Structures are given as C-alpha cells and as structure tokens.
Length: 203
Image 1 (cartoon, rainbow, N blue to C red):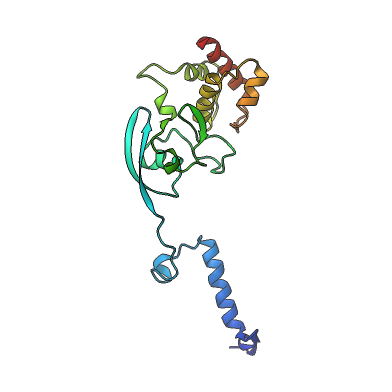
Image 2 (image 1 turned 45 degrees about the vertical axis):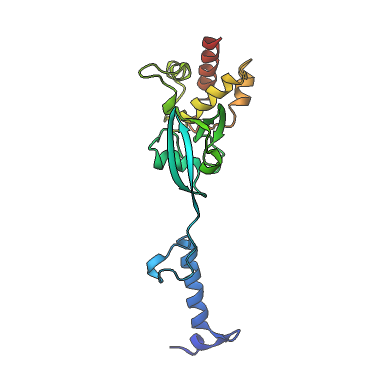
C-alpha cells in the first residue's frame, strides 16, 4: 500500500474516497438496482402502491391490480398482451404508442393506467371486425403507407382520430394533424394519401 492511498482527503483516506466513488458509479450504472448484491433491503426504495383499475379495451372489460406508476402502454402490452401498440421513444415524441381513449388519441407512454380507469380504450387490434379491416387499415395497405411497419399502428390510430375529428380538408391539414406521429422510413406522402383516401370513403 502506498502512502498516497492513506493520504487524508477532507478527513478521509484516498482509498476510502475511491471506494465510495466506485460504489456510487455502480449505483448510477445499474440504475440503483443492486438488490441482493449489496444487501437486500439496505436503502431499498419501498414498492410503489398498487390499486384496482377497470379498463375497457377493444370492447372487453379487464379488472387489474396495477402499480400507480405503471403506464397505459406497459399495461396494454405486458398485462393484456396487445403488442400492436409499440414502445418507441418512451417520451411521447414519436407517437408509436398512440391509442384511442374515449375516441381521442393518447400517447400511452405518457399516461398512467390508473388515469384511464373506467374509460374506453381502443388499440390497433380493436379496429378490424373479424376478417374485415378498418377502412384506414385498408387504405394504408393500398397506398403502401409503411416500410418497416414499426410506427404503423400508431399512425393508423392517429389517422382514425384525425378523420373522426374532421381534420382532412386538405393534404396540408392532414400533415399538420398527423405531425405527432413520426415515420423513420419517411413514408409521409403515402401516409397522407392513405388518410385522404380513407376520409373520402367515409364521406
């Protein structure tokens, strides 16, 4: 051991300071999840409170016990197995997680499941009627309005709402009201065409 290891720094040895710093860095790297590696319960955060919620998803009623911090996106995907709703940026920027709540579009990564208790939720799986696709789904296929397909469920859900809201008077208006949904493959012209086609069919 060198003399430098025991040289005092603010009343502590250099070795003690380095050990403490290394432990802090490990906490940061693991997101604070060390569990049994450093002693169960030692400074562990208490579990989040849980509550009962009733979600009407695609016409089916689900009664679930969820932690109050759990998002609607996580609940739909992990608890209900409806994986059509995609987890993209997880910050509400890309729109891949868009669902309809009481007919209005909602980015499900930004809303908690408990906030939607008792509401009617529609995911992309709930649009088709058996083998009959929703007109927006048909228009997306016909207009080739997707490539990788990752953003497509959110685009379709947003398009359904865009049409229902009456924001399809022009291509520019469609672009404006669909701007909350990003397409990494840049299929925007085809998406606009699909929304316009579906709106005309509805009219």
